[in-house]
Length: 239
Image (cartoon, rainbow, N blue to C red):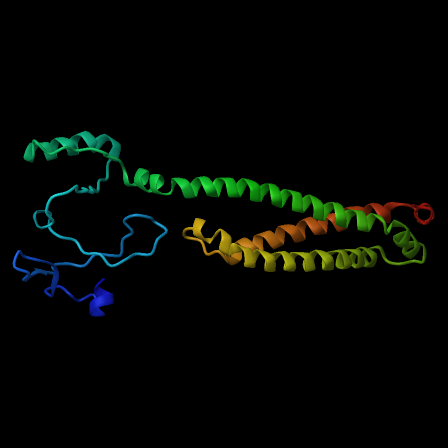
Protein backbone atom coordinates (compact mmCIF):
# COMPACT_ATOMS: atom_id res chain seq x y z
CA UNK A 1 0.00 0.00 0.00
CA UNK A 2 2.85 2.39 0.84
CA UNK A 3 4.52 1.77 -2.53
CA UNK A 4 1.23 2.04 -4.42
CA UNK A 5 0.00 5.35 -2.95
CA UNK A 6 3.22 7.07 -1.84
CA UNK A 7 5.83 5.33 -4.00
CA UNK A 8 8.09 4.67 -1.03
CA UNK A 9 8.21 2.76 2.26
CA UNK A 10 9.24 5.88 4.16
CA UNK A 11 5.71 6.95 5.08
CA UNK A 12 5.90 7.04 8.89
CA UNK A 13 4.35 10.30 10.08
CA UNK A 14 2.13 10.74 7.03
CA UNK A 15 -1.64 10.76 7.41
CA UNK A 16 -4.38 8.53 6.02
CA UNK A 17 -8.13 9.16 6.01
CA UNK A 18 -10.44 6.17 5.98
CA UNK A 19 -13.61 7.59 7.60
CA UNK A 20 -15.61 10.72 8.38
CA UNK A 21 -17.40 11.92 11.48
CA UNK A 22 -21.12 12.62 11.83
CA UNK A 23 -20.73 15.98 10.09
CA UNK A 24 -18.90 14.53 7.11
CA UNK A 25 -15.53 15.87 8.19
CA UNK A 26 -12.66 13.58 7.33
CA UNK A 27 -10.96 11.78 10.20
CA UNK A 28 -7.21 11.45 9.81
CA UNK A 29 -4.98 8.70 11.15
CA UNK A 30 -1.22 9.02 11.46
CA UNK A 31 0.90 6.22 10.01
CA UNK A 32 3.18 4.82 12.73
CA UNK A 33 4.70 1.84 10.94
CA UNK A 34 4.91 -0.29 7.79
CA UNK A 35 4.65 -4.09 7.64
CA UNK A 36 5.44 -6.57 4.89
CA UNK A 37 2.87 -7.71 2.36
CA UNK A 38 0.36 -10.21 3.74
CA UNK A 39 -2.31 -12.50 2.28
CA UNK A 40 -5.31 -12.58 4.59
CA UNK A 41 -7.77 -14.79 2.73
CA UNK A 42 -6.05 -17.07 0.21
CA UNK A 43 -2.32 -17.78 0.27
CA UNK A 44 -2.23 -18.10 -3.51
CA UNK A 45 -3.76 -14.66 -4.06
CA UNK A 46 -1.66 -11.58 -4.69
CA UNK A 47 -1.22 -9.21 -1.76
CA UNK A 48 -3.59 -6.24 -1.87
CA UNK A 49 -3.24 -2.79 -0.23
CA UNK A 50 -4.20 -2.99 3.44
CA UNK A 51 -3.94 -0.88 6.57
CA UNK A 52 -4.27 -1.65 10.27
CA UNK A 53 -5.98 0.39 12.97
CA UNK A 54 -5.43 0.25 16.69
CA UNK A 55 -7.89 -2.01 18.50
CA UNK A 56 -9.88 0.87 20.02
CA UNK A 57 -9.98 2.73 16.70
CA UNK A 58 -11.47 -0.09 14.65
CA UNK A 59 -14.90 -0.14 16.27
CA UNK A 60 -17.04 -3.18 17.06
CA UNK A 61 -16.67 -6.54 15.39
CA UNK A 62 -14.57 -9.65 15.62
CA UNK A 63 -10.81 -9.47 16.06
CA UNK A 64 -7.97 -11.87 15.41
CA UNK A 65 -5.10 -12.13 17.87
CA UNK A 66 -1.85 -13.59 16.51
CA UNK A 67 0.70 -14.76 19.07
CA UNK A 68 4.28 -15.74 18.23
CA UNK A 69 5.79 -18.36 20.51
CA UNK A 70 8.85 -20.59 20.65
CA UNK A 71 7.01 -23.33 22.54
CA UNK A 72 4.37 -25.70 21.23
CA UNK A 73 1.46 -23.37 20.32
CA UNK A 74 -1.13 -26.09 20.97
CA UNK A 75 -0.18 -26.08 24.66
CA UNK A 76 -0.58 -22.32 24.99
CA UNK A 77 -4.18 -21.92 23.80
CA UNK A 78 -5.53 -22.15 27.35
CA UNK A 79 -2.88 -19.78 28.71
CA UNK A 80 -3.65 -17.16 26.06
CA UNK A 81 -7.39 -17.42 26.74
CA UNK A 82 -6.85 -16.95 30.49
CA UNK A 83 -4.65 -13.89 29.89
CA UNK A 84 -7.39 -12.32 27.75
CA UNK A 85 -10.10 -13.08 30.32
CA UNK A 86 -7.94 -11.61 33.09
CA UNK A 87 -8.26 -8.21 31.42
CA UNK A 88 -11.59 -8.65 29.62
CA UNK A 89 -13.71 -11.19 31.57
CA UNK A 90 -16.68 -10.88 29.19
CA UNK A 91 -14.62 -11.34 26.02
CA UNK A 92 -15.44 -14.63 24.26
CA UNK A 93 -12.47 -16.49 22.79
CA UNK A 94 -13.13 -19.05 20.09
CA UNK A 95 -11.55 -20.76 17.12
CA UNK A 96 -8.06 -20.95 18.58
CA UNK A 97 -5.73 -22.72 16.15
CA UNK A 98 -2.14 -22.62 14.97
CA UNK A 99 -1.11 -20.71 11.87
CA UNK A 100 -0.11 -23.99 10.23
CA UNK A 101 -3.63 -25.34 10.76
CA UNK A 102 -5.14 -22.10 9.48
CA UNK A 103 -3.12 -22.25 6.26
CA UNK A 104 -3.89 -25.95 5.81
CA UNK A 105 -7.61 -25.26 6.22
CA UNK A 106 -7.53 -22.41 3.71
CA UNK A 107 -5.93 -24.58 1.01
CA UNK A 108 -7.92 -27.74 1.75
CA UNK A 109 -9.79 -27.72 -1.57
CA UNK A 110 -6.66 -26.96 -3.57
CA UNK A 111 -4.79 -29.73 -1.75
CA UNK A 112 -7.50 -32.26 -2.54
CA UNK A 113 -7.50 -31.21 -6.19
CA UNK A 114 -3.71 -31.44 -6.27
CA UNK A 115 -3.69 -34.94 -4.78
CA UNK A 116 -6.30 -36.17 -7.25
CA UNK A 117 -4.50 -34.48 -10.12
CA UNK A 118 -1.19 -35.97 -8.99
CA UNK A 119 -2.66 -39.48 -8.80
CA UNK A 120 -4.17 -39.31 -12.27
CA UNK A 121 -1.06 -37.61 -13.66
CA UNK A 122 1.07 -40.39 -12.18
CA UNK A 123 -1.15 -43.04 -13.75
CA UNK A 124 -1.01 -41.21 -17.08
CA UNK A 125 2.76 -40.95 -16.89
CA UNK A 126 3.09 -44.65 -16.06
CA UNK A 127 0.87 -45.60 -19.01
CA UNK A 128 2.83 -43.26 -21.28
CA UNK A 129 6.14 -44.78 -20.19
CA UNK A 130 4.80 -48.30 -20.70
CA UNK A 131 3.56 -47.29 -24.14
CA UNK A 132 6.89 -45.72 -25.08
CA UNK A 133 8.80 -48.78 -23.89
CA UNK A 134 6.48 -51.21 -25.64
CA UNK A 135 6.45 -49.40 -29.00
CA UNK A 136 10.18 -48.69 -29.12
CA UNK A 137 11.11 -52.15 -27.86
CA UNK A 138 8.88 -53.79 -30.47
CA UNK A 139 10.29 -51.65 -33.27
CA UNK A 140 13.86 -52.59 -32.29
CA UNK A 141 12.99 -56.27 -31.85
CA UNK A 142 11.60 -56.33 -35.39
CA UNK A 143 15.06 -55.34 -36.63
CA UNK A 144 16.65 -58.53 -35.30
CA UNK A 145 17.07 -59.87 -38.83
CA UNK A 146 18.63 -56.60 -40.00
CA UNK A 147 21.00 -56.65 -37.04
CA UNK A 148 21.91 -60.27 -37.87
CA UNK A 149 22.74 -59.31 -41.47
CA UNK A 150 24.95 -56.45 -40.29
CA UNK A 151 26.72 -58.72 -37.81
CA UNK A 152 27.21 -61.43 -40.47
CA UNK A 153 28.80 -58.83 -42.75
CA UNK A 154 31.30 -57.94 -40.00
CA UNK A 155 29.73 -54.83 -38.51
CA UNK A 156 31.12 -53.74 -35.15
CA UNK A 157 28.79 -54.52 -32.24
CA UNK A 158 29.27 -51.11 -30.63
CA UNK A 159 28.59 -49.35 -33.93
CA UNK A 160 25.37 -51.34 -34.48
CA UNK A 161 24.23 -50.65 -30.92
CA UNK A 162 24.91 -46.91 -31.30
CA UNK A 163 23.00 -46.85 -34.59
CA UNK A 164 19.96 -48.57 -33.07
CA UNK A 165 20.05 -46.31 -30.01
CA UNK A 166 20.37 -43.16 -32.11
CA UNK A 167 17.52 -44.04 -34.44
CA UNK A 168 15.24 -45.13 -31.61
CA UNK A 169 15.96 -42.11 -29.46
CA UNK A 170 15.31 -39.74 -32.35
CA UNK A 171 11.67 -40.85 -32.35
CA UNK A 172 11.48 -40.63 -28.56
CA UNK A 173 13.00 -37.13 -28.59
CA UNK A 174 10.51 -35.94 -31.22
CA UNK A 175 7.66 -37.35 -29.16
CA UNK A 176 8.96 -35.72 -25.96
CA UNK A 177 9.25 -32.36 -27.71
CA UNK A 178 5.69 -32.59 -29.06
CA UNK A 179 4.42 -33.65 -25.63
CA UNK A 180 6.22 -30.76 -23.90
CA UNK A 181 4.70 -28.29 -26.36
CA UNK A 182 1.24 -29.73 -25.72
CA UNK A 183 1.80 -29.59 -21.95
CA UNK A 184 2.84 -25.95 -22.15
CA UNK A 185 -0.43 -25.19 -23.90
CA UNK A 186 -2.46 -27.06 -21.26
CA UNK A 187 -0.87 -25.66 -18.08
CA UNK A 188 -3.35 -22.78 -18.00
CA UNK A 189 -6.01 -25.28 -16.97
CA UNK A 190 -4.21 -26.13 -13.72
CA UNK A 191 -2.53 -22.77 -13.10
CA UNK A 192 -5.13 -21.82 -10.47
CA UNK A 193 -4.27 -24.94 -8.42
CA UNK A 194 -0.57 -24.10 -8.12
CA UNK A 195 1.11 -22.04 -5.43
CA UNK A 196 4.84 -21.33 -5.23
CA UNK A 197 5.44 -23.14 -8.54
CA UNK A 198 5.24 -21.61 -11.98
CA UNK A 199 2.94 -23.43 -14.43
CA UNK A 200 5.85 -23.63 -16.87
CA UNK A 201 8.35 -24.82 -14.25
CA UNK A 202 11.48 -25.84 -16.24
CA UNK A 203 12.57 -28.48 -13.72
CA UNK A 204 9.25 -30.32 -13.99
CA UNK A 205 9.34 -30.37 -17.77
CA UNK A 206 13.01 -31.36 -17.79
CA UNK A 207 12.39 -34.21 -15.34
CA UNK A 208 9.50 -35.54 -17.44
CA UNK A 209 11.49 -35.39 -20.66
CA UNK A 210 14.52 -37.00 -19.00
CA UNK A 211 12.36 -39.84 -17.67
CA UNK A 212 10.88 -40.51 -21.11
CA UNK A 213 14.35 -40.47 -22.71
CA UNK A 214 15.64 -42.86 -20.05
CA UNK A 215 12.80 -45.30 -20.72
CA UNK A 216 13.45 -44.92 -24.45
CA UNK A 217 17.13 -45.81 -23.89
CA UNK A 218 16.13 -48.98 -22.06
CA UNK A 219 13.62 -49.84 -24.77
CA UNK A 220 16.35 -49.56 -27.42
CA UNK A 221 19.26 -51.04 -25.50
CA UNK A 222 17.69 -54.22 -24.08
CA UNK A 223 16.29 -55.71 -27.32
CA UNK A 224 19.35 -54.58 -29.30
CA UNK A 225 21.69 -56.39 -26.90
CA UNK A 226 19.55 -59.51 -27.10
CA UNK A 227 19.60 -59.35 -30.90
CA UNK A 228 23.39 -58.97 -31.01
CA UNK A 229 23.88 -62.00 -28.77
CA UNK A 230 21.94 -64.21 -31.19
CA UNK A 231 24.01 -66.19 -33.66
CA UNK A 232 23.94 -64.37 -37.05
CA UNK A 233 22.69 -67.50 -38.86
CA UNK A 234 19.80 -67.77 -36.43
CA UNK A 235 19.06 -64.06 -36.71
CA UNK A 236 18.88 -64.32 -40.49
CA UNK A 237 16.02 -66.80 -40.11
CA UNK A 238 14.28 -64.72 -37.41
CA UNK A 239 10.70 -63.71 -38.08
